[in-house]
Structures are given as C-alpha cells and as structure tokens.
Length: 334
Image 1: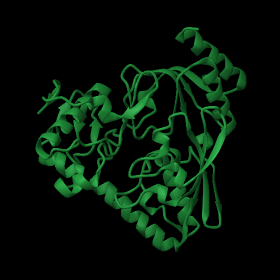
Image 2: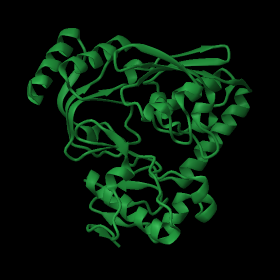
Image 3: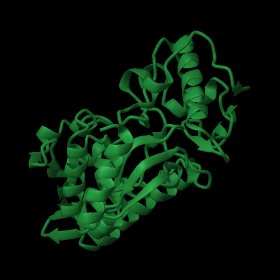
C-alpha cells in the first residue's frame, strides 16, 4: 500500500472501533507554540483501550504515529505530519489519591495533579505549579523547576510498548535525568499512567509554596504570546562558565531578535514567542543563530528542551533540526 492507502485503512479501522479522528488537522491548533502544518490524521482517544487499539491499528497499517499531550514542548514541521498524531488529553485525565500516592492518567494536566496533591496535604509537586502540560508530557521531559524534577516523585510508570504490551517501569528503569528520560529515546514507548509517591505536608504550606512558584513564573516569563516555555536547557558546565541560558542569550543581544513571525522574547531571552504567523523554519533559524553565537563566545553548544517533530514521525531535539553553521542564517533580523 502507498501512504494514502495506508491512511484510508487506518481511518476505516478507527471509525469501526469508534475512535475519534480528524483528517488534515493543522498541528498549530494543538501545540502551545501555535506552529505546525496539517497531520494526515489526528486521533483523540477517549480511553486507554482506544489509545492502545488505535496505536495497534496504526502499526498494522504501517502508518507512522506520534503521541503528544498538550503539545507544550513541541515544534511541528511546517510541512505537517505524514501519519497519525495521537493526542492524549481530557478524556484520559483521571486522578486518584490513595494515602501518600497519586495515580494519574497521562492526559491529566500537571497543574491538576499538583492541586489534587495540595488538597490532600501531599507535598512534592509544588515545583510543577504553573507548568502548562499534561503529566505524561511532563514525565517524558522530566520537567519541573531548576532545582527539582518530577521524576524524583515517580513510583512507577505504566507505558505501552511497540507490540502493544503494557510495561510497568519503576523510577530507576525510567532513566530520569535533567530534562531527559527513557521515553525521549524510545519513541515506541507511550506513557499511559503514573504513580507518584509524595510526602505528608500541610495544605497551607503547600499552597504557599505553589503560589510562590506561580508568582515567580508569572513575573519572569512571557505569558500572552504563544511559546513552548524555555527553549534551551541549562547545564552545570554552561551555568558555571556563563550563567543560565536566558542571561547568556540576553548578553549576546538577542532580546527582540526576529525571524519571520518568531521573536526572542524581550521579557525573557530563553523564550521564543510566536507574534503571529511564525513558522517552524523561523524558530529553527533563531535557535541556530543563538547556538552559533553562544559557541563563538563561550565554546559550548547549547541544547534545547524543545523537540522538533519531523514530517515522517521522528521527534528530535530542536537544536538537531536547526543544525549549526559558521554564520548567522539568513532571515534573522538584528
């Protein structure tokens, strides 16, 4: 079968199974950057069973599949996605509290999980307050604050493997590191559910700490223009040599630098915002220019937290898609 025939087969199987899907859906409507061309199929499973059966149908049809949450750390290609994007969201967002443990489906918003912990006097997730993504996406990136990462609280993760089998992985098996995990390196492994082991606390103290994180994020970070949050990772070597990414980028004069509709935020230089009509190529051009300037000044290549989704299904760190050249790319305005 050719690509078009494979898509037709998949759509028929999804329809027969009652799995909601849409054809030619622009991914700009499903990521916080508001960038990305159309996916051949957007699948919105309403249960674990639908997610697993949909992924299996895609495998049988030979259709590339990508699983996303809220799309808060993703940059889809301008050409779109030649395959099926499975968006795990509000229909798969159950949260259950049992003693000091919280079990959450992958589609639950991270902020809702943190609020549930607060209501039950459970400490350990305060640092996730204000992070705009699902718990599944947050786990894959091992997100959090500069000081803490969500992986520290993981007891186990249930994930679907390439063959459709469910695997339960303990924290050690998840390979958590700073803004990294096993799930970024095994694209066929899809997070379905997580159990978080937390500590006793008081609701007042937990709420106070959460509000502190929220206040700091609102003070420092741009909130109105679409973005993916922090674009570049920090690292011990980079921090010791030159400081945090935002400060380094600002010191090189990149605040306000533009490529098409993408602009390095005047408020925080580690944010690239979409001021209207930005393309993935614009964002990649800014990433490349920033990396080259930082390397020229400090001798280090910065890596991105943001990930780029190639048209045929491979997710890579955005800096790999941007590449590196010896001169600033055309299209980047001073």
